[in-house]
Amino acid sequence: RAFERDAVLNYRERPDVVEGLTWTADGQADSNAVSGMLRAYLPPDEHSRALHFGGHRPIRRLYQRRARGRYVQIHNPERFVVARVPCDRPAQLERDVIEIPALSDRELRAAAARAAETMRQFIGESDKREPRMRSTVPLTRCEPQPPTR
Image (cartoon, rainbow, N blue to C red; front, top):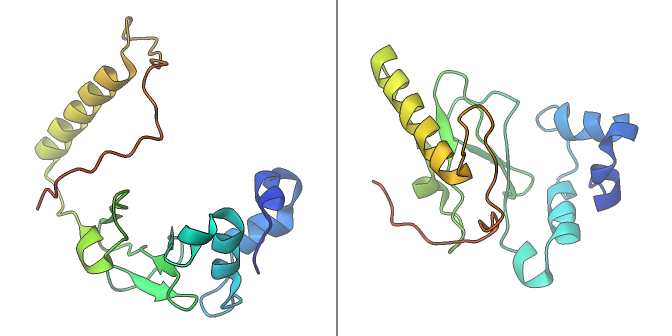
């Protein structure tokens, strides 16, 4: 079922919300619930083209659409699947849901080091043990990025 905004925000006091959003079996959800929630949370000019992404229940492919195509399931335990959600155009699942190839231990350590350095630059830490967010960085801005493929 669709949950009102207040119910989702107060999920700690609402076990029915936690259960409904996390433990609904495939094919058991109200097929209009996702559309209802998107309509409740998004402006009228956006909700009709919006998608809800999630995981939890395993699937065999990169993604699977449910709830009349509005819910995109991406959990495949055999693969490392990522949904890149663009901010400057509607999602194109065949382009935006990708599999990241497995990395060797050496590649994984190098990637983790690069990610840590990027995060240090982003948060602007003055002391490596106590990172602090820069208040001048708006976390909601959308800057289109060129595709990396």
